[in-house]
Amino acid sequence: METKGIGAEELIRIEENERFWEQLVAEDEAQEQAQEETEGVVNLVSVDAEANECEGGSDAEALDDDMAFEEAVARLERTVTASPRHREIYLKLLEFCLERRSLAEAEAHVVEYPEYPYAAQPAYRLIRALVDAGGLAWMELAEDGSIIYPEDKEGLTEDEADDLVASFAVETTPVGDQVRDQLSPERRLSDLLDKVPQRMGTYMDVMEFCSEPRSYKEVHDLLQGRDVLRLTSNADGQPLQPSFFLDMLERSGGLAWNKGWKVTEKGKELLARMGRASA
Image 1 (cartoon, rainbow, N blue to C red):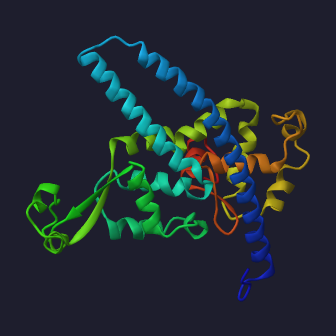
Image 2: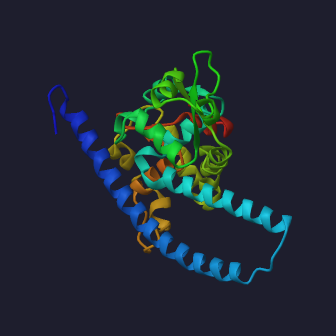
């Protein structure tokens, strides 16, 4: 790792963050594998059910459309959640592009996200990943800003067709909007706080404490000795560690790594709604 110009404390923070992401990716890969096995069983059941369907008219077509939409949503959701490093970037992009944005505008917006310095892809590739997964519509624009459709290129040579295109734009699709809503930080944070009410205060304390960037050790010291660690346990029956709260808040969009663990804008909004003074 290049260390020139980086202080010892900052280097420790970066290495700490790298270990966190490695652990998170490993956990997500294990969860994804288990989900794929479950989906395989579900797909077999679906095939059997389809084989037994009677011929139908508009109702069957509507059902097919609904199933196709749900499958598209599931596909995009897998793309969005596949890499913890990119999840919040993807969701912010889907929200930003609810109205049409030029490609340059979208790229410029991505590089401003606090998560971007830790992304494994350049802004263009992140945008294209959402396009390829059906979350963003890709548009070719003429000089006057109008959309160029396939029929506009009929009868033209490849060079002539290329000359029509002056710029590109992206816009969130209905599938992208659905995934954006399902995985919104507001929804995820609300679900997190409601899931185990006795942990709510600790989650709020951690977000409030992280109004400025904090290291894991600082969060560890904040929570050390609290009853919530001693009296609650993880899935393996072991006492909770402070890293659990960082993990869950990061996954839910309440914290992000920005030279330390720092509360997100959505986390600040939640603190404000809950009447936390530092919000």
